[in-house]
Every structure is written in C-alpha cells, then in structure tokens.
Length: 278
Image (cartoon, rainbow, N blue to C red; front, side, top):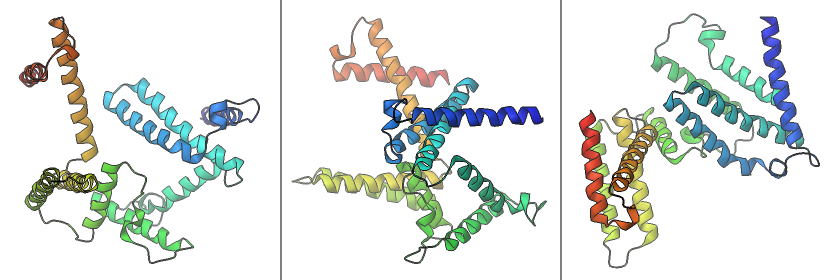
C-alpha cells in the first residue's frame, strides 16, 4: 500500500512539474505562458461540461481523459497563484481536506455514526456553509441567503440554485400548477413584445429571460434538472437532424438544395421513425 501511495504522489509531483515547465517564460509553451486566471475560466467551464458528456456516454476511457483535463485546470490556476505568491497547489488540497472534514461531522467529528436522511444532510451542509460565511472577514453588509450561489455558474444551473435557496425559507410556489401558469404568462409577454408596433430588443430579451427562469422553476417543481433536460433535448435534436441529413443523402440531395417544407417533411419522417423505435 505504501508503494502504491508513493506512486500516486509521484504522479501528482510530475504533473505539477510539467505545469511549471509549460509556464516557463523562456522555454515554456507560448499559449500557456500568456494565460491568466480570467482567460482560463471559459475553458474550465467547457472542460466540466465535457466531463458530464463523457459520463453520459458511459465510456470509462473518455471519463478518465476528461477528468484529467479538468484536473489540469485546477493545476493551472494553482501554478498562476504560486507565481503571484498567493498560494500553492498543496494549499488548495489542504483547504479542501479541512473543508470536507468540517462539513461532514457525521463522518469525521463528534457526530460520527449518526444516521441522517438526505434532508438532514442538506440542512447540515447549508448550516455549516452559513457559519463559514459568517466567519469570513471583510463583510461590508449583512450576508444574503443568495451569497452562497456562485455567480459564474452556467445560466440554467445558476437559476435553479437561486430558486432552491429561496425555497428553503419558504419563498416558493406551493405546487406545480401556478408555476405552469407563470410560464404561460411569461410566453404571452414575449408575444406582446414581439408583436409591438416598434419591437424593443432589450424588452424582448428581458421577457425571454423571465420565461426561461420560469421554465427552470417548472423543471425544479417537476423534479427535473433543467440543464440535464436541455442537454438531452439537444442530443435528441442532433440525432434527428443527422437523420434528416441521411434521408436527404438517400435522395441524392443536399439540405441546401431542399426547401424548408421539404426539410420539415423529412424531419417529421425521422421523428415518427424515432418514436416508433420505442
């Protein structure tokens, strides 16, 4: 076991050494050298989604590969912080260890062995996070319930977490039907803005945003993860569009050569066939 652990630690050290070499101002990679924390954030989000996509595919090799890419992002940030004298990779790991121990008293603390329900665990996690927030210095105002929701989350996830946080204190619709009515109301408001004599683009954007927020709320009330639902719908669209392309190819035609009505006919054909498989 000791040899195995040593091998694992050696791989971490090797990874950190490679990262340092990539950032070497003279002998490193020009792309890596010019990166900043701000420039990396979009790549981090992309890598997280690629991990999710690999997990959905169920391919272990792809999952391992994408997890490595995501880990590289963490190592990259730590290297940048190290260069600026802010903190080291070891500090990141240590902070995580301390946080995990602190947030799991039923595993590591005085409450070891306690049997907690999912609801109990969620409440415990939220309580400990709130206590951590209070302990941080430099608060210029009273902490808000929504401060714990990261602003940089993807939009669907951000909306869902905001709504879940509010629901914990009772700021929520009692059941699904009023939420469904709210969705219809928001869609009607979009239509009003679109059909206005002089459509206002900002107003249309705002109303579409309200409708999307309401749809996320509806998904939450239906116990559906909005991001997962949209991802599945997108993959379904890809499959059906590929079917349209194949159907056109069988007719020895390109999509650009077909009219919209002809493409719609192929779409309905593919859609019917896909439903028939079920």
